[in-house]
Each structure stands twice: as C-alpha cells, then as structure tokens.
Length: 230
Image (tube, rainbow, N blue to C red; front, side, top):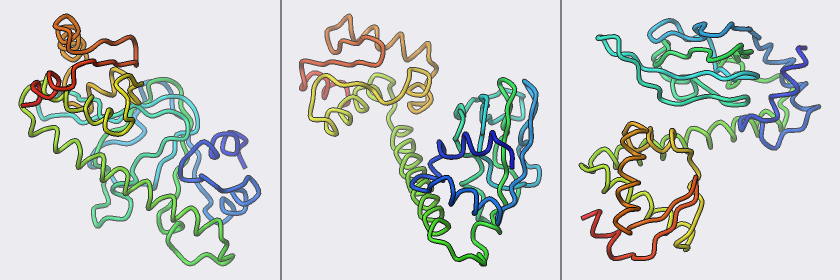
C-alpha cells in the first residue's frame, strides 16, 4: 500500500482514534484508489459523477463554486488529511456538488461509500469508530452551515464581525482571545471579501471598538460592541 497513505491518513479526522495497524486492516477491506494530480488539475468537477469520499493526502486544493457567468468562489481550502465529498456521499444525488482543483501537486485517495457502510467481513471495532467519526464530521458541518445561514441574515459586515466576536467571547469568557479562523477563512465564513473584512476591522479599531493583532482580538466595551449588532 502507498506509503503516503499511511503517513497522512492518521491526520484525517475520519481516522481519529484508530491506530496504524487497524488502519492498515481497514484499507485492505476498502481498497481505496490513490490518484496524483498536477498543479491546477481538476480533482473533481461539479455535476460530474461522484467517485467516492475524497481525502487529500498531500498538497493543497481548493473547493470552488462557479456561476453561469464564469465567476469562481472559493468555498474552502483543503490541506493534508481534509475530506471532501462527505456531504453528498450518502445522498441520492451522485454527482459532485462543487469543483475541487489542485493548487499544487496533490495526492488524493478515494474511498467507496459502499465499502464504508457495507457489511465488513472483519466486523472490526475500528470500522465502527470510523463510522462514528464520519457522523461527527457530518454533524459539525451541518452546524457550521446552519451558523453561516444565520450570518447571511445579518445585513451589515460590521454587525457580522461584532456578532462573531461576541460569540467567541461567550465561548471563551475572555475579552482577549485567538480567532480559530485565519483572515481568509473568516471572510469566507462571514460571506465577505478579505479586503472588505480587513477594511471594516480597521475602522472598528480606529473607533475604539476592538484591538487586533494577527489572529488575536481584544475588546474593552461590551455594550458598544452590542450596539454594532443592533
């Protein structure tokens, strides 16, 4: 079996809590495909036949949506261990919901969903753990998408930023904290361009609403930040 597979699969949340020996046994059952892609190659294309749950083993890839006018929107950027296709894997629709493009040279493995949920001759506990991991991943994705829908209902970018900061404050209980998303991912989450996000955060800093340095955010006046949401 490809060494890249064993080096990188433990990074994937799909194989969380599963040791190397168990992974090797499971892969013997799954018989995954391993495919290498050159930079800018299409790993998956929207509306083409779904070919199995994808896991990026090496490199970097972008998940894209393209409008009829040809405009591309980056939904997320994948790194080693990241999954793609999990939201469609067990649905009646069997075509890719988005396009995945290699940003650099990539190696990807595809696992048949029938192998994942089908009868396993070994009935191993590791297989059950993998299914548990997959269900957790799908649940977390659904929660994230639900949150993104909530943010779409907020009209101004300032209100979105203030809402996000107050949510992080509620989670951490601290007025100074590290944002778990980088600037590009935060812009994507808030449905804004990175330039617009940086500009608005700069204005909020100049007005004394927040202070920030890289991924660190600090605010001193809770009531003023709440007013930005209203």
